[in-house]
Image 1 (cartoon, rainbow, N blue to C red):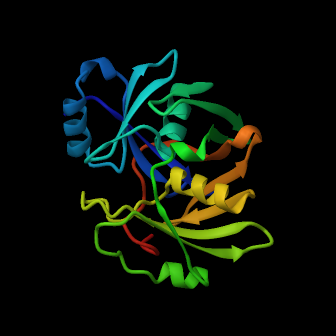
Image 2: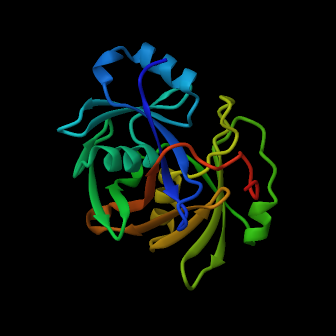
Length: 224
């Protein structure tokens, strides 16, 4: 198994939950895309990052089945782990800032992979959802408190790659923020938290807490 580290991204206020991210610091050890894809498949995280240049913040992102030009939780996790003030992805340069124990990135909505943003009438409806069949990447969401900008969400990648539900997805929250045009506090999965907001120049910021080590999420809402 290739040397790698694991961090949890978008943890809740108590430091639990978050989406696990695999990070291969020595990207040069796996130079070929096909080999990186194999490593990502073997590790089995929703995303794995290969660091190609830690000083410049160059990273390469893979799911178990495909390469992504940009993704939210890998960028937030890599920025935290590398202490980077920016990241260079295949989609473009991602800005990074830190505030109040949070790591936040800013990116363009058009960089995010397509998602179906499906609104429900209540948080309870979102929590009661069954995992849909593969074929469509669905971000299910509902207002918890519209005036306060709080959202309940769950994410179903639908790729058929063993990741039936994603505990915390920055790109989807970024797209929802762009659609709604306002700052949001998103509770996703079993208890992860993402904070987002519009930025000047059409950028969207998304961030949260990052901690080292394996998560406490057992793969379903209410499991912990």
